Figure 1 (tube, rainbow, N blue to C red):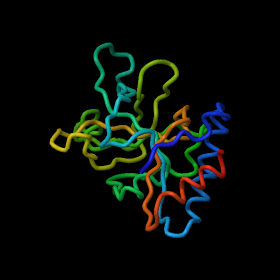
Figure 2: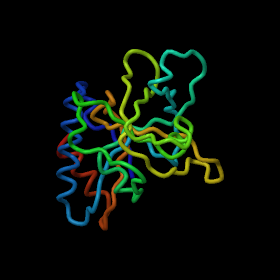
Figure 3: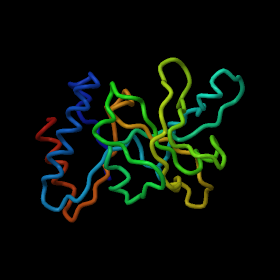
Figure 4: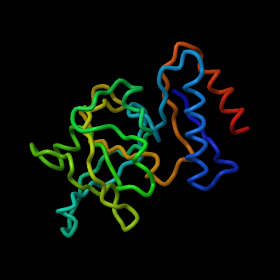
Length: 193
């Protein structure tokens, strides 16, 4: 994995950033040895400072403290690249776009905190408060991914598609490849000098 700021110098518009991401990942998948590639706003086992409240739709009118989750923006191949299976539902796909229904994937801990032993699929959850954060339909549940401290208990984690996150200026690329990642660095320089 490696961190990038793709398009941040010349492309402040979100749509232009997403177009650069798509171009980079499409061209990277054509490089010899690249088996899978994805992007994330941060890695689960790195220091994670993006925490957001989780509110079930049926609890929206209640006051009080909401539980928190680590929030990640990811591209559709993220779980495949890390070899994390979907326990229920589906991964993000090309249909999960800016103007489509807002969607969300939860880890087991977040699903249990919000819904107990009930099914999280199809339910709606707001990640982060305020009017700028819509309620999102839960489309998948994944296993808990260990946070930075390997001895720490599992934390609630919520995954949003990059296409619905609103900021794609800096991200971490995760790649499964048989070649050296310098080829990917060279590709980045060609498409975003």
